[in-house]
Length: 574
Ligand code: DQQ
Image: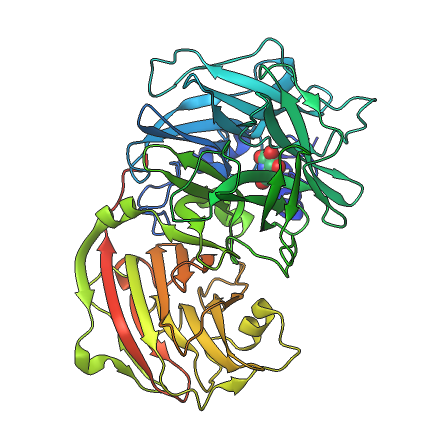
């Protein structure tokens, strides 16, 4: 018989090899071996987040069923109650009045009937016209097939919705011989929307061979669902579409709209999470409800040529319409960059709220931290006029804030473009360009930006910065998040991320906001046109040994137009 330690090693190997294990569809029923380690998760360890949501311990992945009910925000999430690796998945549950401070509850949905006995996977909440919330989620049945189930609150007068019951009719949607749906690629129902024909519609993620598909189902009563003849949308070559999200965005203004809104005043967004690459893409397009088909606008594609909510660590995201504040909120899972062994020692991954709306250009979504986060701000610092000129090769420390838990908002003004490097036509991959031209590679106009979670000697730092290139007939702005020096620990994933930012630096200032939270750096460039989230584990730049700098490693000087930085207060997370 294998010894305990070799069994642990075997599971570690599986987990490392298969990411979080989902691709292989293994279910590890007994992870008790891990519990003694992760149960001790130290609340004061330096990497735990101060104001980004995370549970006290154990494995967490996708955000599930976010909603607002009776003025309370609900967040469910994929959770392993037994350990710090993926397995034994239940829907953990927390509620909040402000999306920042959270109260934990017992898991809301856990394996209890044949249709979910091997796991309760991702899904979404829908608020019915009566005001009652219901949840559709994927269950793993005794044959390890993926099926779709319904859960309802036991007591709708309880604003915390602590207890949920499951429909005795479950599963409501399942792979059969007739529908030929691949039983291991049929998961993650969206929030349902109601058409003028009084039919509910919901989309489930799927693949057929290499075709990524958003399978559409319709129902009059939310119980009896019939598969539509064609998917809502599909793309050849994408592989499995996990966690689809489909919602309207208003053409005019920044308010969010309810998921059932259709018509001239809105465009539709379809977001898919690609299992193969663990990247998400969204397209903006038109939804023809008569044909029940979604068509992305020209040039809007689900690939690296398309748009991403986040160019860093961000996956399995989901939005919901916040009817209290008329906005759409986006939650996503920040997957880990630490090694599995380190995960077991500390035991967590996070998820983050953002406000999201369609930007003025009509071609992309703009994201911005929810306004409630600003309540966490304390001791505001700014920069004296005399320090605003950032000469080539200079570094300025921003002191007076807790650099390990801070909010920094900076913008740059460029007046001389003479030294901008030429953008070669082959430099089309921004992530590659950022990794070739990291923060330490001197340039003409840039790199300039922030060094966050930096050690005093700056040997450790995460650099979030811009570089401006001379393109064919415009200046091209590259935004990077360079993690290559983020930690002296070589076990971490330190991939550098990047994206081109659709800003004309001759007429617009170049803004960068970074939310720094111990091991998370969430950066918003160009007022939210590009977001990059990094997960970093410095060894020196922890707690009060973390520093914050503004730097310019280009030869041309740039002007700091504005700088505001705040310490961030700790939120109630557990
Ligand atoms: N995570 C869930 C699945 C989903 C995947 C299982 C995405 O439902 O497809 O934990 O991270």
